[in-house]
Image 1 (cartoon, one colour):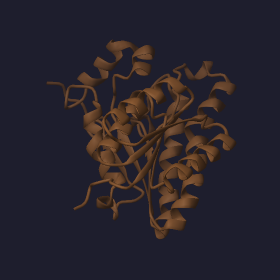
Image 2 (cartoon, helix red, strand yellow):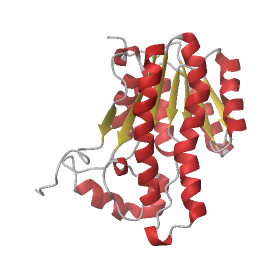
Image 3 (cartoon, helix red, strand yellow):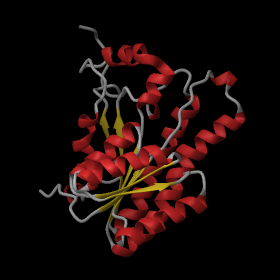
Length: 255
């Protein structure tokens, strides 16, 4: 079973911070050359410096997933850099919490444009190149809110539900051309953004309700991500791999 990513080229959207930074590191350590995208240059440059210091290849490409022009230019820059795109991780997303009755239409549409249309744009741009090559891996990053109802994140949860559906539909179309499409669903994670919105108390409340009794760590997701990106997952497509400590598939019983 081959789970090496040597010679592969990956794009991780939102790859400079939070979960994306962990995904980028995992792919890099498995042997892939990793291009990280995001709206802010500084964290992208930090990842590149860190990766190159370890003797691995990385590229920073500032990009707003809400812009078709920027997405197309980003993918072309990566192709110019390494000759191909083999792996796409659609991680970039926003989730400003708000009671449903207070959600402004502009905010709702911005979340959808970032969390649903962004992956559409990147998946289409990358899949056109992947299908020509006859091989590719697209991995969408979901959330338990794609399957469970949570208060105050109606727009975010709806966007992730749509992304889950996109995963299945793209898998049906693209897999005959050698491009598998799957989703990875992390559990509650203490990222800077999450802590800024919900505080450590919020993370602890969710984590303590899980069978594993702790929040998700980067290393928890690394193996699952690399597996989905590798040749070992060739027969897996349209699937969602939940690395969520049991959040979506167990009922808390205490203890």
